[in-house]
Length: 330
Image (cartoon, rainbow, N blue to C red):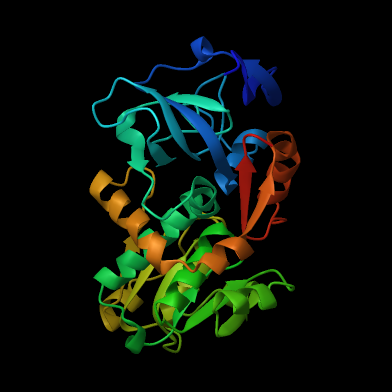
C-alpha cells in the first residue's frame, strides 16, 4: 500500500474557495476510530456549493469535501468494525464540518458508519448515495402517514435531480402512480423509464397558488421548497401527506394554513443528516429491494476527482441529470 494517497482539498485564500488535488498521508487525516479505504463517493448539490464556494457550506478549513462515501475498513479501534468490513457513510456534517469522501483514504467516527447491506456493492451504494438515502426516507415517511398506492398519485418535484429521480423509481417499483415535475425539457424519456406516469413542467408547478387548488395528489416528495411546495400543498388531497427534504427553489414557504385545517393534510420534514442509526439501517436495507437495479444504472454517471470542479459548477446551475458517482481510483 502506498504511503500517500490522493484527495481533493478546499482551502480559503483571500476570501475565496480554492480547490486542489493533493497527495496526503495518513497522519494528515483528522481524528477518528476507523480508517477507511474509500472506493466511491458522489456529487451532490451541497458538494457543488462547497467546491465552488457559492454556498456557506464549509465550516472548517482546510476541508476534504464529499458528503457521502463507501468503502472498506483498513484499521479500527472500535468494537463495532474490523478490517475488511464494508461500510457506507452519509450525513453527520461530513463534507461540511468534517473531512469527507473525496479522498482515497479517510478517518472517521465509527458511529457515523452503517454496514453495507448484503447484496449491495460500494459503487451501487454511491449511485444511491445521500440522494437515494434521502429519497428512501421520504418514501418511508409517506408510508408511515398511511399513503398507500391505492390512495392516488404521488407527485415528485425536482424529479430529474438526484433525490427526485430515485424517489420516482422507488415509488413506481412499490406500485404508486407517480407524477414527475422537471424543468428539463429533455427529461421526459428518462423519467418515464424510471416509472413516472405523468410529466409536469417546473413552470406550471412554480406558479403561485391560491390558498386551495383542485385536489390532485395523495402525497408528495418535495425537493424544491418555496412556491413549488406551496402549490403542492394547495393541491394535496384530503388527508394527504407531503414529505419535504430540500430547498433548491428557496427556503421560503408562501402558503396559508388552509390546506392543513380544511383538508387535514400534513407536511413532514425529512432529515438525512442527523437521522438516527436504526432508521438509517432500515432505509439502506429497504434500498436493496425497493430501488430497481436498472434505475441505479440509468441514474448514475462516473467521474474522477479531477473532473469534480467542472461538474460542481454544473450541478449548481441545474446542468446535471441524475447522480454523479465519484470513483476514487479513477
